[in-house]
Image (cartoon, rainbow, N blue to C red):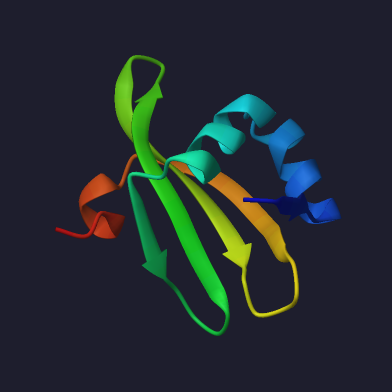
Length: 84
């Protein structure tokens, strides 16, 4: 599956210190794919941040011809976002 990174997503990779390999791993084998608003879909997987559990959430715009990663972030609020 092919994804493009928006300029904002590239900036967030650097600002939030997320490795591109981590994002590619989530996109290749997400723990979950959760619909968000509009044409945005969240690819997310549980991981660790500073030896604590967290989610890596990758927001993808699937509305156009190509899938575009619009933003990336980690969160410790697993129960808020993880679908059971």
